[in-house]
Image (cartoon, rainbow, N blue to C red; front, side):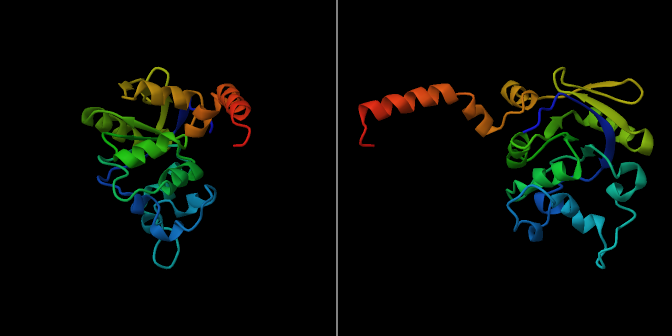
Length: 201
């Protein structure tokens, strides 16, 4: 997993509450077990018309936001069914940070396992960041995970919440497997002792 330290990028405003995982990545895209290629399905029911053409009114189809790396979203982002494909799709599209007032628990946990930062801010601060994001090409934000701060285009600073252990894992690019592999020498020593004590196993 890639390390997340500091991110500067275009922020896209998605001022909708209760964006669920089926809206993030609809069920027809869940057949794959690979993380790659899901970006095309991100928000597909809003991004595309019935004939498959792009919906020009959807924020990620607008020229200023096509390469957005940050999403500023309404409350309760990622609610609904559990699907790890949701952060996979965000990551594959290029979005590395989602800012909201609140996230559904399972989606929130899945983000940390896939290198996406879900940053929780107050309603007041979200309104400020949403306003910043609505500036189009000038909607660049900087997210500093170490300092737990978001810097707006006019120099404003917003603090965000994050658990210390999850912060450590993102800063060092560690998912659950990566954390386990840090103990590889101890695991090897244990397995050697078990084999010597019980060679029939």
